[in-house]
Length: 310
Length: 286
Image (cartoon, rainbow over all chains, first blue to last red; front, side, top):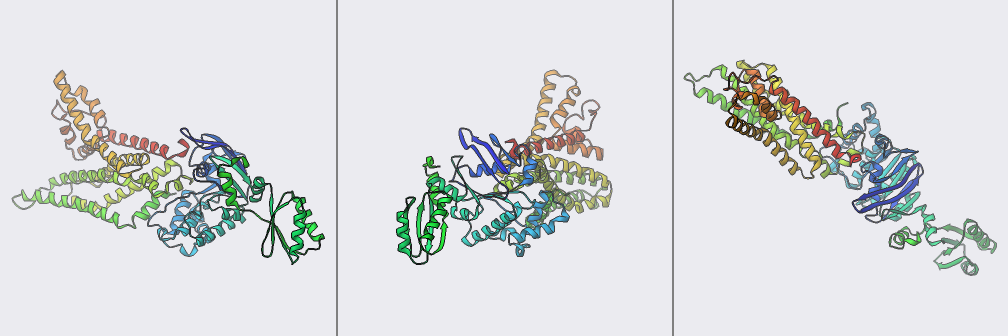
């Protein structure tokens, strides 16, 4: 488990990270969200060992990595938001160079590099010069580089920035695959809906302070205290509408073409009761689903100055 | 295991035509002066030949030329080593690896020294003319090469240090050239001024003050080290003549040859600048 405890980073009088604390369980894909200047990159750089914290600690399974740089380098793979590549170097040589920089034995490198290039779908580009690759390919190559020493935790600062939609999808697929391999991934992005889709947990940071942390659903509920439920009946739309209007914890009923969306105030058992009532009213239900909500809206709400909601 | 930075830089630089251009220019300049020297020596002879004894001076000339070219090249090779990584946005990717900051800067130095060694080796055929006439042994040449490489380490480590401090490569390069100027010319002027003032003021025996002054002023002067090597190898007195100690009494007897002091000084300064550069790029020390 990764634990950030009371992390503070100041530059003179400016506080970039202000007493930040959070925990990330092993295997979590954690979305780190915040507006520009919120303290995401600073936090990530401290985690990656590229910057020293003014105060606070970062522990992995109880070991303070801020005091143990070699442990940090072993456990963490880092991909910055902006990075360059060397001229006159082929993809395989680029990977071999970083394998050397991580002191991976020469005998293990060829197979390792092949495996990593396969994960990021760059096998066929192995003998191409790095500077001839597209931006999306370079991003994936940099991701493969960050995996070369098989780190437990991957820190990816805005990995989708500047990518076209297709490259974004490819990057997302690779990250999902890495998540399924059990890696803990911390990923920052401004593309919030994509994070919501990919991440198992989200942390929203603003002014160096964690404003909200949890699953998208948890954050939604924490803010609105209401769930958004979509119900798709098989016919009997009118009957369902009149039933829902009678229920006290249902509000904001929106009738769509083939389903009804409602705001529902209640816990899990209340949701189960709602479904039971609909079934008992002899209304056939094709789909009954709680919606994730609009993360973009949540983000704006949290970071738009209305912090009391968080 | 070979330093990964050394390996990568050798690999990439040898793919570029630029390095072949630099080596060709380097060998070309040395060849030009070698031909010029032989031609000038022959033109003074009645029989269109030259005294083979003069060939040892060609060795001194070529070696001095090489040292001068190395002093010009080493800053250019190293002054962009760290700032170039910063500009390319690859420095962070290096720092997060298991390489220590010292091995990063040391790798940078090794790759620059490797290229300088390549230039020296490329110029070896020009030296072949010396062996044809004799008078200079291969060990002399090897000894001189070691001296040049140690000097290149000192200048190169300065380049790396300034490159770690300043974002612009040009600033680092100018600063190293300024320091080289001070070390080569500044210390000589300083020594000569100091000695002249001392003699005029006290009119005392010159050599009592000369030893500490000589070591003090010249322990990092590549020119002083060079002439000391030449004197030790060829039995000449260039160093004594330049420092005006030759015509005082029986000449100054130095307990430790200047080139030895010079090389020790170079190694210590190289270590210091590399350490400072590594501290500069170490995020843990920021």
